[in-house]
Image 1: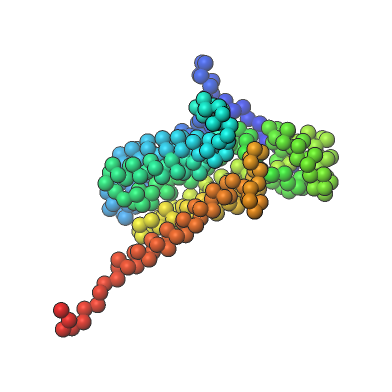
Image 2: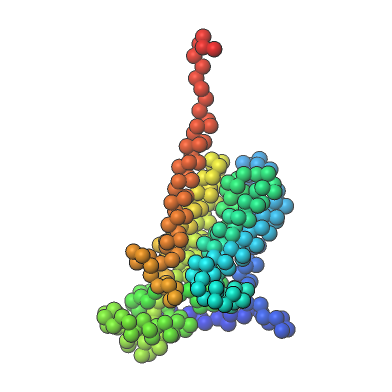
Length: 304
């Protein structure tokens, strides 16, 4: 079994200021997006649309605001609404954690809408350009989760080569052991817990880095290398992220204050399903619209 390194969440101490790894991951995500965006400017069909380096800088400013505000509000509304409504000042304690990707996604959608309006572009022109820049940020965020030893996966067979012990999950592990005696006996988990006081879990953060970060990045980069109908790149992002997140959620521990919802699916899966459906609809619409635009009416000789 693997053992989580249990990193210090503080990366650097600058006098009284403690710079946390998760905060650094936001900086890494920002820099990576700039690099990917500027590399995309070299593509002839992207350059022909008039995108500039200044557009990227301004776009990312909007995107960062949308991510932080939307991510926090999404977590408040989707996951712990009753708690935050009872303790509204806790909403502002972002440093204590609590961000939602789906909320951040909605925040970015709103931010890109404002950016598109300001630059007199269509919303889909903007999102098609932005989409390939997103997976590197997702990977950085999940790396921050892994370093913090949070958002771990579900309990798994200790013989699995990827099984990992998370020191931060000790209380959850004890509760799981008491609630699942038959599964514990099948996997000999009582012996494992007696030795380590922990249970083996899926390192779901690493799965998300692989799928939402690496795989989705290369899919979008490859797909967007050639001119595509307006909305197609955005649609592939929605489908790709939705499928990746929906899949990983089967290995990720559900939030303890929510558990599994209808049909045995997690909140993350229910929030991902609309993304997948919207992406499929958008992709079909995009190519059908492009097909109608390229068709030319046939002129019959003698017709007016």
